[in-house]
Amino acid sequence: MRFVVLCAALAAFAAIAVTPAQAYNERPMRLPATGRGAVAAASEPATWLVAAVPGSVRAAAIARRFGAGRLRVGAVYRVATVRARAFAAALRGAGALRYAEPNATLQRTSALDAVPAGYARGLVVEPGISPPAPGAVSIAVIDDLVDTTHPDLAANTRQLNPGPVLGPHGTMVASAAAASFNGFGVFGIFPGAPVVSIGLPLEITCADAANGIIAAANAGAKIINLSFGSADDCASLFGTVQVAYAKGSLVVAAAGNEFSSGNPVIYPAAYPHVLSVAALDPNLAPSGFSSENTSVDVAAPGVNVPLAIPGAFDVDDGAADGVTLGSGTSFAAPIVSGAAAWLATVRANLSNGQLADVLRHSARDVGPQGYDPATGFGLIQMGAALAAPTPAADVLEPNDGISFIDGSVFSKPDPYVWRGVPSKRTIKGTADRVEDPIDVYRIRLPRRARARIRLRPAFGNPDLFVFRGAAQSITDDANIIARSKKATKKVDSVTISNSGRTARRFYIAIPIGKDAAGSLNSSYRLEFQRIRLR
Image 1 (cartoon, rainbow, N blue to C red):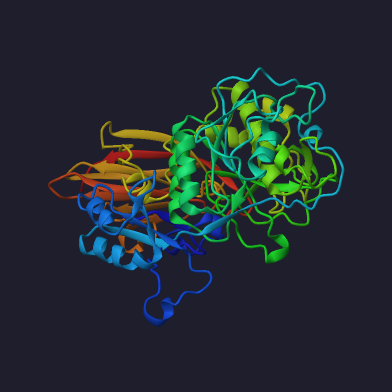
Image 2: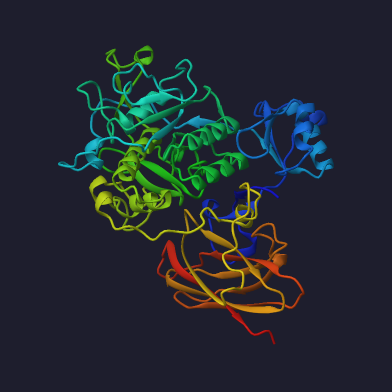
C-alpha cells in the first residue's frame, strides 16, 4: 500500500486530458545513489523520508536500528541519507516498505522588495461590512513563530511550540489574516481571530511541514495557512494534507512566486483539497511573480500589503514602527485564510469543502471571463461569500483514490456505501477537475448476485469505472472490469456480477471527463440496483 500522489498523466483514464494538479499515480520508488554517484550532489538532502506499511509489527524495531525518527503522520520515518537505502532495504525484506523520497526543502513564498503603497483589505471587505466577534474558529499559521509581544497579535495568538522568533515571516503572515483592530499598526481581514502559531525551522523540509500540519489539525484549527512551497512533490506532505482535510481543516496555501522562473507547479498549493491563492497587484492584475496553473483557486491582494513585523526585524523601511509592506503569494494566502475564518464563524454549518466552494464561486472575476489559471475564479469578496447559497455537500471526502479508502492513507477503510441490501441505493456527489477530480467508493456485492450501477449527471461529464477488490490504485487498469464514458449529460451504466460463494468487494471510480461546455465541475447521482443473476 502506498500514498497516492500527483503526476503528469493518469494511466487508467488516458483519454482524459489532465494536468499535474488533476491526476494521480502511485509514487515510484526512489533511493539515494550509492558508490561513486553517492559523492553527493549539492542538491542531495541531508535526510530522506521512508514509509512503512501501516500496522507492520517490525517497522518500529527496524527504524530504531537505523536511527530513524517517526513523523506525526502515518508510519513515515525521517532517516539520514547515508542510511536511507539500507533502512528501505530492511523494510522491504520484512515486507513493510511503502515508499522512499528525499526530504525536500520548501521555500517561504514572500517577495520583500515592495515599494510603499497602501491598500489590500478594502479590496476584499466591502464598506459597511463588520466582522463578527472572534469565536472558536482558529487560524493555524505554520511558519516562523508569531511574535506574541507585537501589539497587533499579542491578544489573539498562542504558540503551540513556544520558542524564539527566528524570522519575521510568520508574524507578517498572521497579521494579514488576523491582526487586531486596536488603533496600532495594521489590522487583518478578520481582526482578532484566534491564531495558533506553529513554529518551523528557518529551512523548512517536507517532514517539518507535515508535522506542523498534523499538529494544527490535532489542535482543532479550522483553517490552516501554508505560505511556503516547492516545485518538488512530496508524498508525505501530500498524505498529511489529506489527513488534515479529513479531520475537518481547510488548508489554504500560497500558489507560489515562480512565474518568471519557468512557472513550475508549486506544492502543497497544487494538491487537491487545498485552496490555492494567487497574488494580485493594486490594479487587480496578476502580479508579475504569481505562479499560474490550473490548481489556482482564487486570488487576493499580494503586492505591497501592509503587515505587522517583529521589532527586531523592522530595520529596512526607515521607521521602527512594527509595520512594513510585503509582497508575495505568502500574504495573499492569509488574506484568504482570514476570510475563510470569518465565513466559518458566521456560517458554522459549512464543512471545510463547502467553505472553499463558497469562496471560489462568490469571487469577483478579474481576469479573462470565467476561470483562468492566473487568478482562478477571481478576487475573493467577503460580502458575496457571506450571502452565497450553501453548496451541495460532498460525502466521504477525501476519497480521491483507492488508497484513500482502503486503509492505506488513513487508519481504517471507508465504510461500504452499498452491500446489496436494500436492493436499491442512491448517493449524491460532486467532483471538480481541479480540487476533487476523482471520487472512489467501496461496495460489497453478496454471493451469487448481480448489480446494475448507473451514474446520472446533474451537470458536467462524470465517467464510471469499476475495479476489482484486488486493485490498489486507480492506475491499476488490469483490474478494471467495467467502464462507461458517455457524453455530457448522458447516463453511464454498467453491470457487474459475483457468481462466487462469498461476497466480493469492488471499487467504483468517478473521474471527470471532457465537457464540450468547458465545465470544471460536476454533480451526480450514483445509483445501485441488485438484479437477478442469470
